[in-house]
View 1: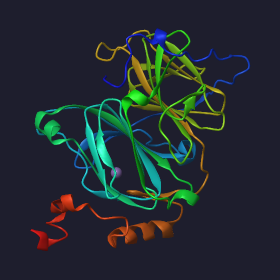
View 2 (view 1 turned 120 degrees about the vertical axis):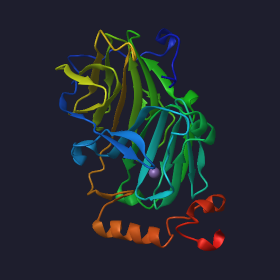
View 3 (view 1 turned 30 degrees about the horizontal axis):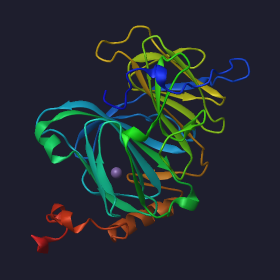
View 4 (view 1 turned 30 degrees about the vertical axis):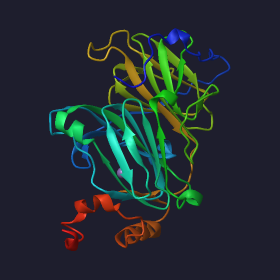
Amino acid sequence: MPAVTVPSTLRLPRLPQTDPVADQDRPVISITTAPTGLEGEGFPVRRAFHGVDLRALDPFVHMDQMGEVDYGPGEPKGTPWHPHRGFETVTYMIDGEFRHEDSNGGGGLITNGDTQWMTAGAGILHIETPPEHLVRSGGLFHGFQLWVNLPSTLKFAPPRYQDIRAGRVALLSSPDGGALLRVIAGEVAGHAGPGTTHTPITLVHATLSAGASLTLPWQPDFNALVYVMNGHGTVGPDRRPIRMGQLAVYDSGDTITVAAHASQESRSPSLDVLILGGAPIREPVVAYGPFVMNTRAELVQAFEDYQAGRLGSIPAAHADVRIDTIDQEQS
Ligand code: MN
């Protein structure tokens, strides 16, 4: 897995030992299994939050694990141009490459361990595709896309694009060196990651060696979720079993505990998890397709604005992709 790795966790800053008496270790409320589906032009995803009440996910609304898939030549797929309004997308690539381009002039190629933040805000059109050379060669493709909601006061904020290179994530280790933590956004025990979202969140990719246990301090006012991307282990103080493709929702408290089974599959010798949480927004969520709004009227308005071209237009260099459907005169 070519997300950022280190030869040894022993040289990294260590998380502090948590206090099992003073700190309330968050109990686990639910464990759900992500169903598989197809996104965009047909790339395989796992719907990580499927079946979980939005109030437990708040401030998040949606997360897809993209892949992991090993494409043959000519097989890699992306999305066509499409709109968004009312939230932010966070895309974290582990294997492979994804090219982003948007109607606001943002764009870039993200690859192993890079993160891309897009604030759709008032409205944006974008496209996400594997680069041409990867389409030709095929290869491994694995990443995540997380949707972070915006409060009503920021739903119409100007769109924004941030590229976060893999080298900028904050690397930490658990006190005994058994777990590597990559802080992508927010902070853990005072170690801040590079990502900035309008809505305060913390996003961590942790790799636990077989048999390792991790208890990390977590902001008491944030919700807490753990999604397993590979391997198997346990979550919470009651050590409930969890495996690849499952999501744990934690209750309130001060710390989060995850542990890796002593034996893992030979294909993925460690337990890899995304640990995420944020400050709940506690507003009504009316979401449909690419829009996440507060009311049904705002949702209708979003569709009308999109149809009228008010969410932006596809840059001229890409106009050819619309010839068949939109503008016959250009052909
Ligand atoms: Mn999109």
